Length: 480
Image 1 (cartoon, rainbow, N blue to C red):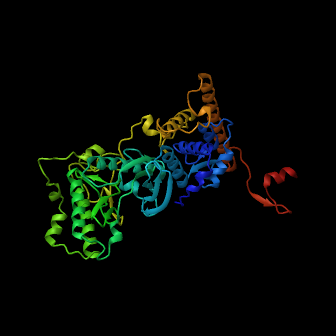
Image 2 (cartoon, rainbow, N blue to C red; image 1 turned 180 degrees about the vertical axis):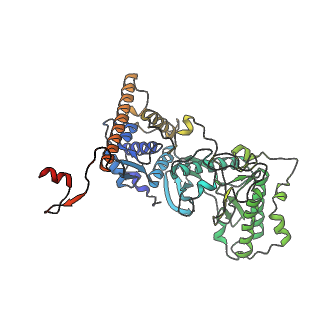
Image 3 (tube, helix red, strand yellow; image 1 turned 180 degrees about the horizontal axis):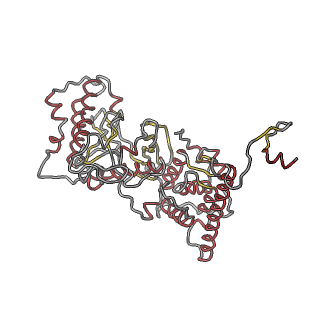
C-alpha cells in the first residue's frame, strides 16, 4: 500500500494537482490513462503535461504503465494526496500527524486544524489489502454493477457508506460516536474520541469498573438493534473506553446491516459472544450463564419501550437487508426472501474479526454525486469534453466555502465561463485528441498483428550473423 508522506504536498503546484486529478478522472475508463487524454482533461494552457507527470512519478503519486501503451494510473499515495488537499482547502485538516491505527481495510491518522485548535482523526479506507480481498463478495457495495472498476473506487464507496452511518448515529443523539466533520473520496474526518481502545485495556485491573463497561457495550448493541441496525464488528478494537468515566464510544461502521437481514440473529450473537469472551478471558470478569443467554438474545434486545419507538435507521441508510432480503452482491438482487437464507451469506465469515455485508447507497447519476468517482466499467471510448466538465465541477465542489478566502485561480481557463468560441475550439481540440488516440491504437494493433504473422506471409525464423547481430532470414536473403 505504501507509506503516506505528506511532505510531498509542500513541493506540489496547482498544475501538479490538475494533472493528478486528470489521471483520476481518466481512470473511469482506463486501467492506465493515455497521456493525450490526461492533457485533454487537465486543459493546461501550454498543452503539455510531461514535466508534471515526471514530478508526480518521482513522488510516487502515479505509476507509469507502458505495457500496452504509454499511460499512467493513480497510486494509493496519489489518492491520499488528492483527498488531503481537499481537506486542507476546506479547512477540515491543517496538519497530519502520526498513524494511530491500522486495520484490514483502513489506516487511521491523527490530524490538527487551526480554526478551532481541535485534534481530529483522518480515516483513509484502503480496501484490497492482502488480508481483506473478498470485500466484493462479502459486501454489496456494487449495487447491481458488474464491477466497481478498481480498489480506489471501492474504498470511496466504503468511506461514503461510513459517512452516512456516522451522520445518522450522531444526529440520533442516543449513541456516543465521533462527530463527523468532513468526507472526500476515500477519506473521512471525525473528532478524536477520548480514551483508549478496549483491547489496550485487556489486562486484569486496567478497568476500574468492568461491569459498567460491559453494560454500556451491551446497551450500545441493543440500542442499535431497536433502531434496526446491527454493528457486525462489535469487538474490543472498535470500542473506545474512557477509563476515568468508564464511558464507551463506538467507531467503525461500514459493515452494519439491518435487523431484517435473514442472518441478523447470527451476526448479533457473534458480536456479543466476542465481547463476553474478551471480558471473561482477558479481564477475568465472571458472567453467569443466565446473563450470557440474555445478552446473546436478539429478541430480548428488540423488546424495548413500546411507548417510545425510535426511528428505523436501517431504512434511512438503506442498510443491507433493510427490505428483508439478502442482496446478491454482484447483481444487486435479493437472494433469499422472508428470511429463508443460508447462514453467513451476508458477511465475510472467513475474517478473523468478523464483519457483515453492508450495502452502498443507490448511486444517483447526478453531477454532485458523480464528481468524485474514480473508476467505472464502461467500455465506450472516453468523452474528453464530458470528463473536462466533471473536472471543473469537482474543482468548484472542492473549493472553500464562500465565507473563506479562496485561493487565486491558476488559469482563467480553469473555469468554464469562457466565451462560446473558445469553448467550441476546446471541444474540437478534445475530439482531435480522441481521434489521434484511436488512430494510434489502430497502428499499434496492426503492428502487433503483423509481428505475430497476420496478413502477408513472412519467414520470422532468425539467424545470427558473423558479428553477433540477430537478423530475420528474409532480410538476409534480400541482401544476397
